[in-house]
Amino acid sequence: MIKTHIEVWDRCLNIIKDNINERKYKTWFEPIIPVKLENEILTIQVPNKYFYEWLEEHYLSLLRKCIMTELGGKARLEYIFLKENKNKFSNSTDKKHSPVATNQIKNPFVIPGIKKVKVESSLNKKYTFDSLIEGDCNRLARSAGKAIADNPGKTAFNPLFVYGGVGIGKTHLAHAIGNAIQVKSPENNVMYVTTDRFTNQIINAIKKNTIDDLTAYYQHVDTLVLDDVQFLAGRTKTQEILFNLFNRLHQSGKQIILTADRAPKDLANMEDRLISRFKWGLSADIQPASFETRMAIIQDKLGEDVSKVPYNVLEYVCHNVTKNIRELEGVMISLIAQSTLNLKSIDIDLAKDIIRRYVLSADKEVALEKIKKLVADHYKVTVEKIQSSTRKREVVIARQLSMYFAKNFTNKSLKSIGDDFGGKDHSTVIYSLKAVQDMMDTDEVFKNQVTEIERKVQMSIGSGF
Image 1 (cartoon, rainbow, N blue to C red):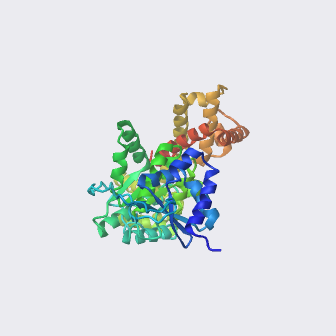
Image 2 (cartoon, rainbow, N blue to C red; image 1 turned 60 degrees about the horizontal axis):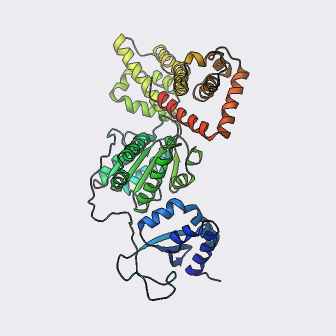
Image 3 (tube, one colour; image 1 turned 30 degrees about the vertical axis):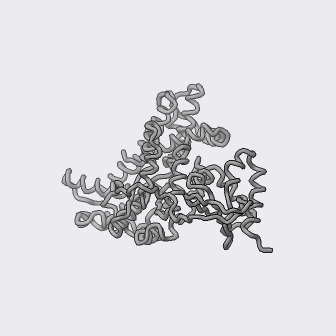
């Protein structure tokens, strides 16, 4: 038996009635009119765009459940708005289901009367596709990025979600896409913004009561590049505003590009509805570069200076610096600087010395000291207290959390970590790691604190020494 749009919507309403109170039902669902049903897409009519936004924000999960229950897993819901005229309704007595005059708006979020303005892109012009060496590690993400640059907002890669570790080229790719779009389509408003900057914009807008102005400004953006979305963790208001902004931009055919240090499914303390949006397009990971790709990258970066570095030294450095490209570049810059300032020839011995001093020691020692300081500052205790034997609760938690981060962010063994915390044995370290994980599993507030400190640790260690 073929279902009509009216029958499907009536059954959906029966489900909705069982899940919300009568007042909310009358306010938000009685005014909705089913219009048509085609290819598992149910089109409903709502009074205006604000009505639509409220439904998407507060009842999206409920609507999805109803539609899929009636039409299956591939079901979709589309909206149209009433014409702003006096003859909105027909003379039918059953107005809820009557055919009505409608105005199907392809871009419901273009605000009449507001002239489009040019936004500040904040793109780094040195990051281009030409300077982004292609390898197996980034081929999918780079190819998708070039396709987007040719047709922003018109490919299946919207949003493009690029993820991977620190210093392997995510930000470079994001800027490269933006720069290529501006070259090919100068009229396209591209905006690059970090998550921290986006959050600060929202905080300032809340203080000044100008949220509407901020969101209106972002509606002038044709391509939004949001970097390091993992730092949205625990920022509920920022997530809420991004969710609404995402919907507006995406429905308007605007391009969205996101980067993170992990896949959407692994993002912690993030609203499910936002993660769901992140998965709409293409999620492409960037892996650490292979030896051959590292060699190609460093030769390209050195340019004319490549002749100053013996080939066997290049090979040695690329074999031993594998963590990320930033680190690799830092070693090469240090090599050339040491050679020039100290009148030394560049050889394997100098390369070994640079790697030992600037990479290995930094990973194991400086990172650990920064971890201790960040955790100590958060709990308002001293590093000396963390390394002592005191059993005060706040100090014990700070000590255990420092060990937890030491395990995750350094290459130290459990015994070595214990030695750095007042000579604790490895079993104490194991107990601390388990204690932190147990508290995170049972205490949402503590879990949010850990996420915030982890963000600071990542920024501190990733920003150089």
